[in-house]
Length: 187
Image (cartoon, rainbow, N blue to C red; front, side, top):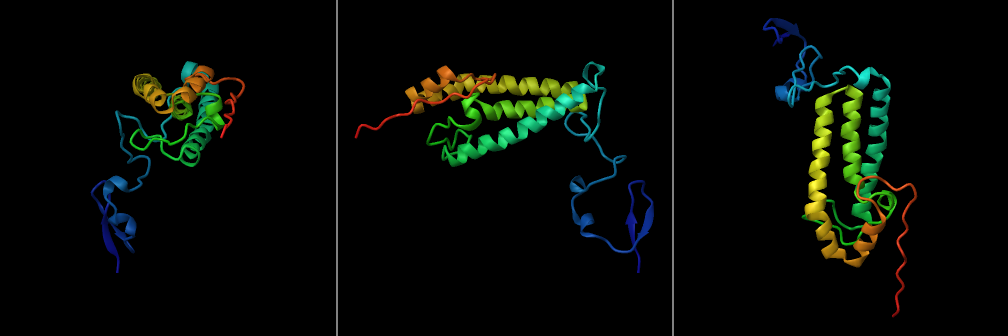
């Protein structure tokens, strides 16, 4: 016995068996590209605009930014959890100052990686709105870091953070890794 299914255009068509797919809310169902709507200000999933400066090479730069940003993000989160014994969230901060991995090159690798991924998507898709969004996200990160995070870290870790801050740049990575001075126990 064939069940009838209602299509997008309102016509009923025979269907042998209803899958569990149809039990999902319509907002969660995957649709053919011609049915996909837009989200967040008209951005469309998988839509490629003209490349920046009419250079296809900007798409390659975008892919490189995404590919560089994602592992950096994962590594930095893992170091927070495993070495810092905490999270990047201010409500559950680390117990130890993390100064290994990408933190030897730049003080804020999570923020740098997130902005790199956003700007990489902007370059890949040729979307100026994503480019603007990336800039606004970076400005928000900068305000948060300067206004809250750095003063909180100075208060929490004192001279250890001051030494780290004096030797590792906030946003633009060093070319060589910084090595923290080893502390000697005199007990």
